Image (tube, rainbow, N blue to C red; front, side):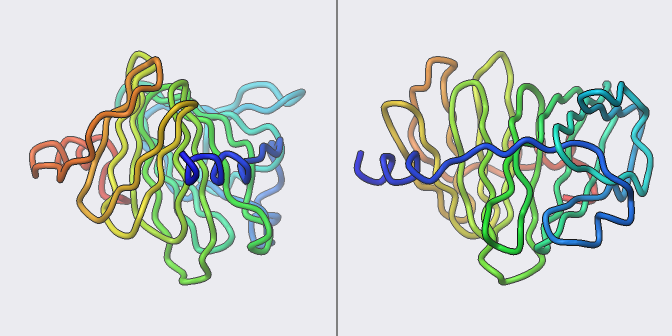
Amino acid sequence: MKHGSLLRGILASILIGLVSPAAAQTPGTCVVTRVEGQAFVSARGAGVRSAVTGLGLGRNAKLRTDAGGRITMTCSGGLDVVVGPESEVDVIGLLDGGARPFGLRLIDGIAGFLFSSDEENGVQVRTPSAVAAVRSTQWAMRVENRASAIFARTGMVFVVTDDDDARLGPGDGVDVTPSGEIGPVTPWGQARIDRFGALLGPDW
């Protein structure tokens, strides 16, 4: 439990929303780089709009994809995020020169994360049943009916709930029940890895 308490102590939420595309070139921002199918972005006071390539994301950004829809966004700090079909996410924190981790609330669906730099930047993802925290690795997380499934393709992923925690190594996955019970960490078979890959598409 000591490890879980440490992780919970460093988790923080930062509200963000929509910004101009040019802002995506500065620290603490993301820009949409690919859209497939139907995908939508909204922010407080800005309404809902169709996601388009080049759209920048700032405070209070919310993303939603329909069946068959995907969004890929490239963020400062060498991070790419792929949001798969039938997904709903809130972006709650952006990389800020390495001082703050990227934060995402995955309400439903699936998202994949890829770092292209070795700057040890962090990602924290909240779901209805768990929090996952990583640094500079490749991994994915899926939410179905408030249950979570987390897979580490490379590096290490830490998973935390109110009462438990787990550590995933390369090739490992874990399931978390809607009430926050963490199952055993196991090497995922290729069939389940391929199902994640099929949902996330070629960018992941």
